[in-house]
Image (cartoon, rainbow, N blue to C red):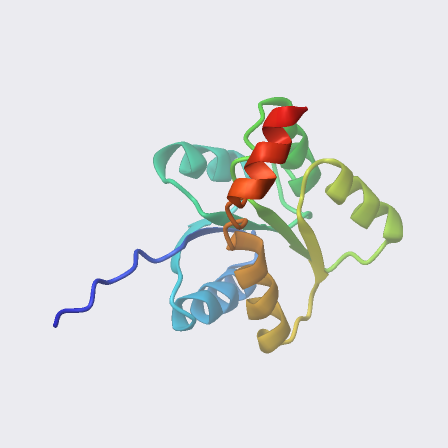
Length: 143
């Protein structure tokens, strides 16, 4: 019996620091994700048009187009609803967290990070929501 390979989740890592970008990519690839990278928001938007990302890891502090500007653009064009996004940043200001989540990021994590926690949260980020049961569908149609 041949096992069918499941397609790997495709993650876009948006980080301007090459060492941190490679660390994140290595962690994700060892966990079975297929990764793509971008050094800033402009490059990330180009990459999003080229690939079908399952999720995105986004830094806030980047040149040219930073993470907040990217989230604003993604929110205004409804891309944010299609690509689950985790902000991964060295910033730990509660206002930054509120702003990022308010712009549509699904998760916010600070650097440095523990591998196990990071991978658990990435898995949760890209997990498909469960399909509604027949009973839930009927309730939804009654409204």
